[in-house]
Length: 490
Ligand code: NAD
Image 1 (spheres, rainbow, N blue to C red):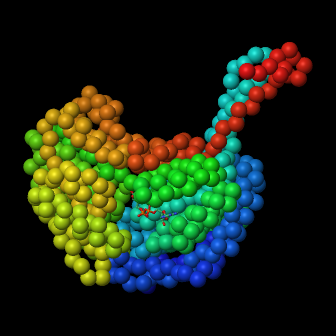
Image 2 (image 1 turned 30 degrees about the horizontal axis):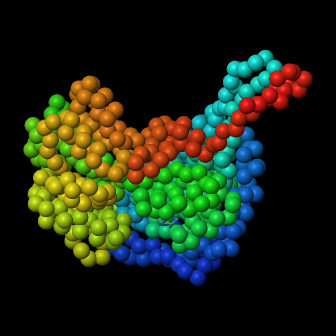
Image 3 (image 1 turned 90 degrees about the horizontal axis):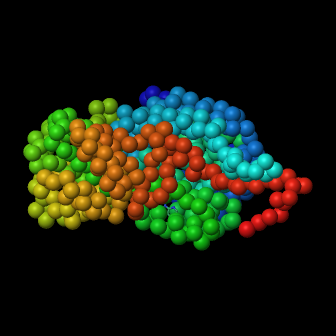
């Protein structure tokens, strides 16, 4: 077996050391393709969480005062290590999460790009000087917000951690990450890269355990100043309430249910290919995945036929197998959800174009599935499906389709395909989403803000906004001691 085909032993990283959890409870990591147990590890204990809190509290000042250029060097080295280790990390991620190796490898490289971006942006956390009278100076300075608690999901176990550790450290904040217990190796790989790059003890910490106990413990200790969650709307609401009780500012990167509007003026075969490629990536378990397909009546049938051809070529299998192009779902809960959603859509007279099979057995496999004539109130359309089901509906009027696209509580991404500049501008303005892709399904780039509105959350990751999320402003108003204006206030 090549050296990289090894799943690591799972440990917690606290105050600069890898340690076993010391709680009485434990976790099994399952291979979603086989249900084989690939690791068992003990949860973090309460004393260990206190240790992590002491560590971030202690290191907050020294990390804040570390020159941005030195912090930048550390981030660059962490990014370099991630890239160098990409094959080994990809194997572990594929094993624990199910995605094909090439997708896992791409995730590692994108994560390194994000960290490199933060390495540069952390050196540009400028304040400003406000013009004033000659005997006073008005300044707005930036400071790191302080210790961070971050919570990340299982669908992108490397990227979602990199998107929090990178900007937090770049901005001068120490961090405790509670990553998904189901995909711990991806998170460990990011934290290892930072540790091996020379992060001082306490600046980055990683724990796995009972999520609700960890968040309660970390947020109630009067240490954490910022909470960042990538996860579901449900958990977002829970953690928002908890953060509010403890006066902790938040960034919420939550679920989505992105509409895609396909106008008739485009190359329909090409657009169908791009839409399907994006829809079935990571078996549909992508928060900004194109999810609700509104295709103009004039090109609907041709679009569906092109998607069906694409789906016919998908090779479903274990992510670690070289020829797999779509893996299993990450856990059995998702299979159940998808099974019910599919049944609900078919009950409401959706037409099954292809797929629909759920093989059963040990693996969490669901066939890539295409549905047409879908009732827009059915679960596959109205809720975040997070699975390989592509529901397609028709429209013939732009006003009507914009209204239908916005008829959702979510607002993460939306996509538009048209050659008309005027229509593109109009839809970019009117679609209710944090991000709009025009003639592209890619809305996630290191240099661009990524985030949602409505139930999809608030705040951004990536881009300058991603680093800014870990900074606070301070207004400094100086006056010459002897000048007449001294002490004047209003
Ligand atoms: P989840 O909300 O169940 O879990 C997210 C994280 O929160 C995990 O680490 C989980 O253990 C933890 N958690 C759960 N309950 C908690 C509690 N009470 N206290 C503290 N932590 C708790 O989400 P998931 O099922 O892991 O991931 C899928 C969801 O994530 C989807 O809704 C997806 O859209 C969303 N997501 C959003 C983005 C984005 O950038 N907007 C990116 C990826 C995934």
